[in-house]
Length: 158
Image (cartoon, rainbow, N blue to C red):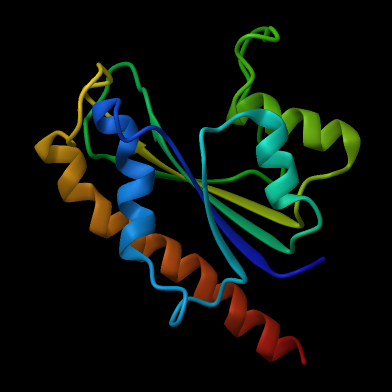
């Protein structure tokens, strides 16, 4: 398997945690150089299954930051970086643990880019906070840029 996968993470019934799904709704597979668009709850083994064997995986997730700035967008290229700080347990495996598990098992995609949107509200309920809703189109454009840059690089390499 090769190619590009865009993976969004989150729960649209947990307010700003639904930002990933909102980004996915703005992406159009017809003009996006990606082989697959997928949405998941972020469970580690599902993430491994989605990105294993890919040349590029772009993951969009809502993040917490302290101090936070709701709507701020982070772009992380995880070729050599780690998302895990401290320990993990079997009840709390998420994106960071999935990256580290993939690294240990040699299942990381060739390139893994995480687009994180800082959230504000994560309680039960629908709808994004205004700052996060305003960030969604910018995050979608960043995903397009990462995918198109990769596609141009692939064509130049031929």
